[in-house]
Image (cartoon, rainbow, N blue to C red; front, top):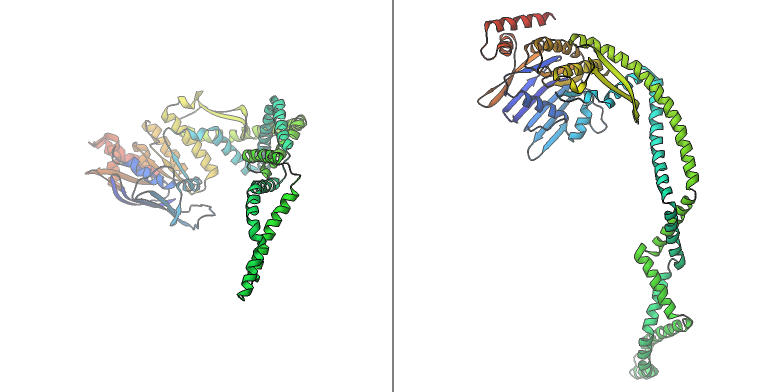
Length: 512
């Protein structure tokens, strides 16, 4: 439950510091006083909407949050600050809005007037599966096996679709693969060959130029002995000169030896080979990558040759899975029908208090998906949900929520109801209040109300007012509460009849 809420600098509110108890907590006040602003500032702390307060903070007690990322104890604080950007903190540790919303889903609910998501098929199926798993291990095993088989058949069908698509173009695909393979095979590149041929090309390129230079240098080399003699006369050790001349001579001889070894090399053929290899490198990146591509296409070609066999195996596996899934969905449907009877019985019990009847929950068949083949629809007096009045819809949703709370929540849920008694008669508003008092056994409920009947049933009553463009909120009781409920009955000009009626409501509800 929320023990405390603090707010600083948000629209018409300058500062708020409120303490809350368990049970049903109602906010009332004139239109435009700031009730919705106050509500939004609280729910924004659970990541479900954007808040704009400079500082907002809630202290939670008896709330269970399981997280590997955060250190949590019995007392939990959620804080939001806003300057250049909005930041969220969980027990002083920074947390993203998305993760905060995810962690809050286990204990926090916010109902909007036009939100129909509680009746979405996926959510109802999820609730039924929750009941089924809670009831028996067999249901858990059945659901697990179905979901595994469904994911497997989904994967196999995708593979089969690709094979069928490939089959349509199989000849073209085979022809293209063969063409790509033969193109590389015809060249038959060898790793390291390109670098060797480039080296040969460089030698051929240097040949004529070097031969001319060496011819000019020959007289110099033939007379180097004279320099050695001169050094001897100068009594200078000539070994450094002799070593240098010998090294130069060795380089020249090595070059001539390489020319001799290439006498049988066809220069034109070498240049053509270099050109062929260079084209492969430009297309594939390297000789190694060209050979890898060729190997890939060879495997694809092998696959195309075996495509009929692979298709046959896939079809057999899919057929086997379809049989399993058909049996599993039949069992799930049977069990879900029984669980729906329990849900409908509980909802009808609450609907009676809400002055609604003739609820019908229908289980039809739909195309297979991850939830099975069950499609669940709700009607009230043979009227589908989208055609119900907002008052009827909200009461029906409240009956569903109350039913779910019997199984899903244990004394620590937090529920925000935004004007759930809007457009209702006094009798209908009172009926909602009575159901909420039952729901408040499992939830701490926050509600905005414009009806005296619901407001008089609150365990805590807060009045929101605005003076000089600044909103204020305070807890009221005794005479202040009688006055506020009287205002809700007769308007700003409170009549004596309204005062008497307000007193009777509060006396009656204290006995309820």
